[in-house]
Image (cartoon, rainbow, N blue to C red):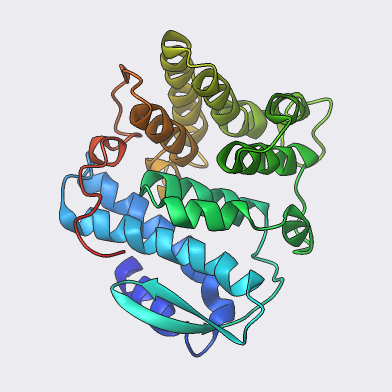
Length: 265
């Protein structure tokens, strides 16, 4: 059913590009669901599903920022012409982070750069409610990738905002178990703290497991892969960090970029 829904949404994007939000959610769910039966992402169809989700995530923002009437996007082995969408409810902070993490996992440097040039102000236009620390976190990632100034101060602002006393939207459990850990991993990464990174990765995966093992969430495929910690681990792996933590939440072939370059993306 997921495969059919994903294909239907992707094939309909040229007719209605405002389905990009639904397409991102569905293709990302499908990519994670592949890892239920293929936890190391060792099979080509699993990689194809991750690439498609990454392509849709990039297309969300390519269509939102273009000044032209149409923008060309490669999605699921096909070059497609999508209509410009401008700001949309789904062009928000959560979608940006998902698109960024997917591009990092797939090692798509040009797509990462394009995402990092998306104005944070555009994400605020979505009307979706996010805590200020989410925007500070996005600003941190963009600053890092583009080589901007005040990286440390921006990261501190993001981390401080996850304090329950400061967060207005995210509940304390979500902030502590899902939203703060990638910031700590990034902190250890930029400091080139190999041992600290592995400790933080262990903590991040324990928090992820605890969050998604709770009875009301246990059957949701969202928790099958720890996307944000996976992206930070890909950064660290590419920088030569020894990754000592093994987990089905971190598909090994994705960490080790085993499929990168297998086909045009």
